[in-house]
Length: 282
Image 1: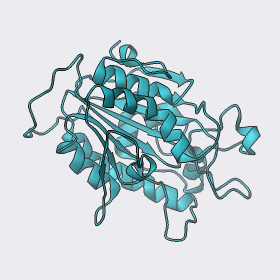
Image 2: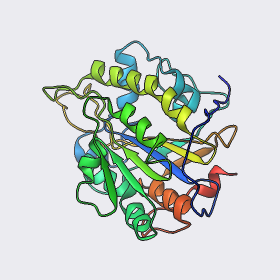
Image 3: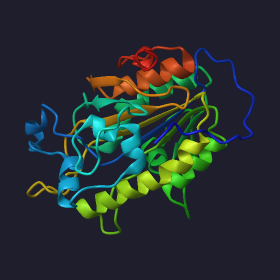
């Protein structure tokens, strides 16, 4: 699959920028881990690997756009081969903070960046579940998605009010009415994410950066496990401005994403995390 071209769109005049990008879209999925962290034993999560185990359970996954971006380059997933070359920069990110809760993971991911960017006057938009997790955080504009899926709402916001600044979504993989999530539910959620990515990618200009990652795993194939699992997050970082991605390795904290966002949008540093902005351009 070749490089996608973004469709023409009306957009507000660019604000003063310090680098290549004036928009960052972060999709932080709740429940798609890429293998147990080295401290998973402390949480009784040894052997957790949501993506690999769901793919094995389903006899393979078909995720056309995620494969093109490089999800198969991050970890072994049956049915999702490594892309040659991957369109996105790719790697893994471990959670440095304690716990398995998505709110704590999102706080580590973008908390410092939000404070830094808000102080710099950069617009920040949170969609759906991300708005709930960031409720009460200064500087965050909330966007609900009643009557439409979270990724449809994300695409709408990214192409409109969020065309300038940071847009964050945190869809839940496999969410059901009764709260029970199994491999089939997660596989269906991944398929919905993949299907929705086309419209989102078409909204991105060459001054946009898309980050797809996770807020921990949810490996229901582990005996007795129904909630979150302490896993590394897959990390995909894409822009139409670059023909292919680079290997970002394993990031030592989710805060590296926030540090990169602050670097990109505000030419600023955060209290936590190490920016990989320069690596993206290598």
